[in-house]
Length: 282
Image (tube, rainbow, N blue to C red; front, side, top):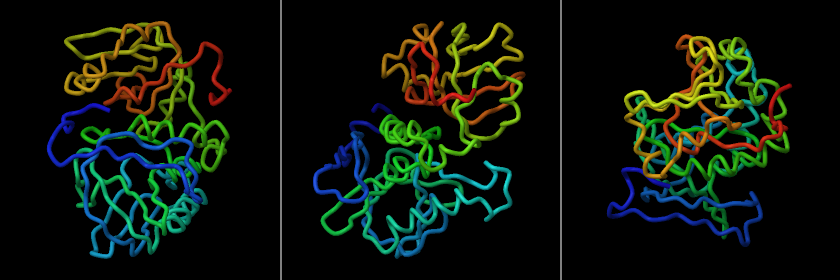
């Protein structure tokens, strides 16, 4: 995993072992560089992504986006998947000792810590984000300035999505088709996974555009701004190799003529086999 925070003093690579872990069990473990943070205890769970520690500080589980009532058009507090995510987070973390680690911006505008959380439960130690993702209680995501471990987050999510566990069994979280650009506009300002074939790839003054149709003013587009090119350049990411390929992209839908997703990290883009994805809505 690459980024501006690599190579600085005081950072370490967190490697979780899978042996002797009873719950949750992990097929894959994170292999990314993070900066160590404090060790505390979890005093309260606010929702499916927010903890209150014993010192009163709040922690947001960066990279693991839980279900929200808005996803299903429900009233606040009335979305069963949202309640299920909170209950699972309570089961995994409430009253437990935790270790925080950071891979980018440390706080959000509300003062919450943006951290990766590792739970100590007796002799077991596990990655809390990975547990939520692998059981289908969250989706993997990135924010500008906070993309550490994204490839591992996406990997942790994959098995739950393929098995349609948790939120993945609900129509609100179906993978969307890039061809249905008018339908995508209905999901403006929401987080979505979208699959389709990139028809053309263009580089305009270092801004990348992946176009999924012949009319860029209406069709679905993916873009990478120049300020986010460093992560792609460090990974030697070949944008032109995406031309004509089926890909899956994740991010927030915006409207700029047609529907658009802006990406900040290579792991937001996955190259797919040529056959139709089993995740894709019909």
